[in-house]
Length: 153
Image 1 (cartoon, rainbow, N blue to C red):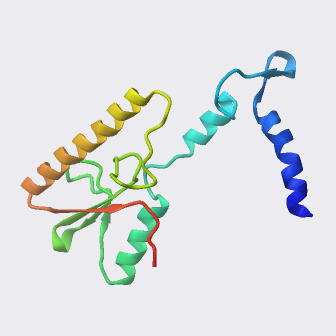
Image 2 (image 1 turned 90 degrees about the vertical axis):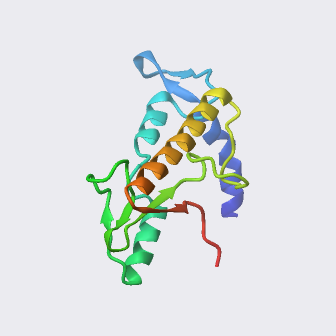
């Protein structure tokens, strides 16, 4: 019953999302492949965070619950560090599978549009990660990586 109502309304919702307001508040068809208008897409993208992400918060809660004390985003060290354990001279990066090109992961899928641009972007992130790792190793810090994918128990 409730599911049938949702299924019946779905085509109407999809049609509505393909429209965008134009001059005078009239609805105009947007020829983009995107299901959102430019304003909605811009709003959604502005909400993507670089700090305090859900995977990062899980790692931080785990560390704190197990007695580890840490610093966040330490400016004294090179790079944008997620978590620093000064007592153990260790750095933990929490990486998203997509942005850092996690191989053999179902969450890393190369987009079908602008493939070359995305591959350059992701490969650049991988290269930057290698450089950061070398610089931190030279500074005497151990590097650890936590990937931002669901942990199965």
